[in-house]
Length: 292
Image 1: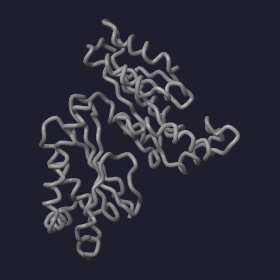
Image 2: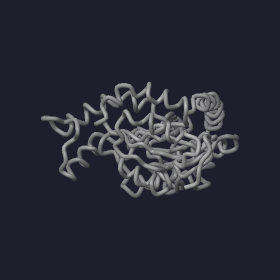
Image 3: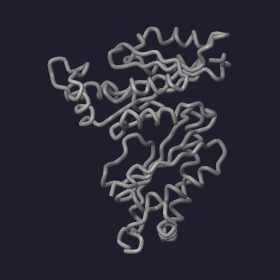
Image 4: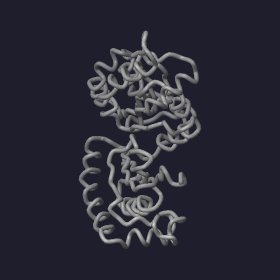
């Protein structure tokens, strides 16, 4: 690995719920050139940052995997991150999953949850979720791994941390279906169900929002253009604030009933509008397309 300048040196703290895929994330980061430190003792995090920021250091990108066993670390998490940010570019990645998913994962490997003590796996998950709530709230990136296998999570990590220009804000614009549940790893959610549903048109039902007839139908409806204009205007100060607060990743979701028609069409149009703005790296995700 080549020596990086101080501007290139990064610290990524990878944490989250036990069983949500921290080891998989660490392996993926290592594959794309990050120096990964697993189960780092909390008191060693600042010395690690000092090592990275020393002139001549050859480890410009370090990921520290920290789990709930580092209890003292989580008591002072906000203060520790603030201290590190004084000397280095640091981000926090939080991996999450639904309680049911986590229970199934622990049962499949026949291991106890690290906080369950004499209780059940569910008791341990509840205790950990309570302890981690504030950390999840302040994290820069949250990834819900409930519907991801190890290969899909690895791909998501590579796409997110493979070395883009971090001066940009990386925006994911995502469609989804309300009937499949709200996405848990998004920053802003909008509802497209105020528009007529193409599902009830025999000519459009089998198509999706990626098809021009559906897109034209949705975007021509009363209120669609006004919604997009207003939402784009609303996002402008939000994204400017994210940049001031050094929040480089955000997910904007638009939902309709099934995530097939209206939300897909609106996401495509909103993403095109955002892509024309400087300083934004825009990606598109259709969570529920193809589920019907």
